[in-house]
Length: 533
Image 1 (cartoon, rainbow, N blue to C red):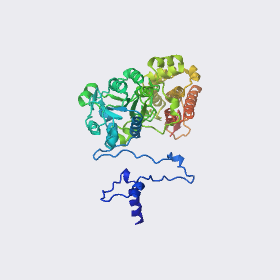
Image 2 (image 1 turned 45 degrees about the horizontal axis):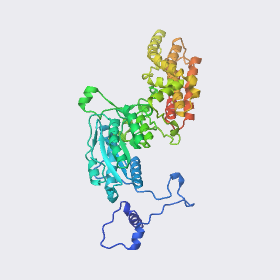
Image 3 (image 1 turned 90 degrees about the horizontal axis):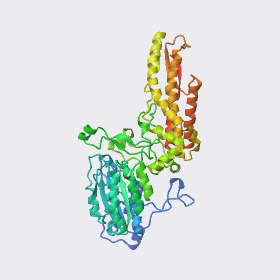
Image 4 (image 1 turned 135 degrees about the horizontal axis):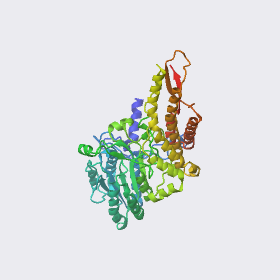
């Protein structure tokens, strides 16, 4: 009975938030009405203040304005959407406001779009008399290869807005002319901004960087001239990469057969990639899906310059399966980024000419840029490490064949190192942590790759010159990874240099993707040693 009483009392206290009581023919008394409006007191510590470690507010939390409708499927409540809704609602209380939702209707964006429109639909339903006011007008625009105004004009009619969300459809072209459409929307919005004297806010919902980001500069000029802030809800850019997934969901079978697979462009976070195309020994493609901490470069630049912001969702997903299994794809983070540190590593949101000047002014920056443009460098893929000894001639022949695999890889990794080495004299003049971390990580990883590849070849050459088993009963040499590489001072310097660079990145840039990548690089040993069996 006591448990039943507690449940009943709890339901009565939170009735306005979701426990709907049946209508009663009796009127509430004045005292009970006052009681229903009295907020529940928050539990506090003995000092009377909320527990700071939980980041609690001294005021009761607001209700989350989201109720999944029947049949909506799996829907994630995105705090980024609520942040935008709260912001435009507050803005409309300060001055008449028009908000335009620009929604990407390509197939890859479907899961994210479903989450956003579900929350939007509930917001429109709950708007009531407030939405009937002209203080807050809303327009819905879809885009893919071209834009389409679902609502002919911004409106406060919640029925029109709710119906508009059901008319979005899905585009099968696989093209996102995002900045072209955004420019057209801005042109139309100037009327609302100047003649109607309204605040205008544009919110873009997309999972891609856009196929026409060369139009970003024109968009940026218009937004800053007319003070129209741009907000974008989408995934973070992959660290130093432009694309992650093959576009298996964006184009129909005919387009696939004609053009092949098309990538889903989501980055990089900087104007040009500042990360080497160097794989990881033993980790496959998983290390290519590192969270950069920022949105795609052009989106971030436009948002910041216009007075808006890029709101990176943690994991929008591309399908239900991908949302369940991170190994299947999508942008995700290994570990956590430090939100207090990352602002120090903001990319240079500048024009192409200004970026070129940065490269011209410092040899280390220029070397990193040039190294990042080089073709992908290969690593030893399951090298032969076991050598049975039946005769000296047979062993020499087996070792020679194994050396060929490493020898083919050496020129590319040496070119990468030479390119980076050309900027080493200017490394100490780098002042921004982002460039320091980028250069040091690149040098550390390149030296690590050289040590493993050239060290492997050197160890085989050592055995080829003659090496005696310590145990008379041994018949097989086995090469195993080790922390050292005792085949000459040059190789030892490679190992020491790689370790110093990588450990420096981990120590100096904690809580950043550079530190995460450096730590993963060191999980694979840098040297080799012979054992016998």
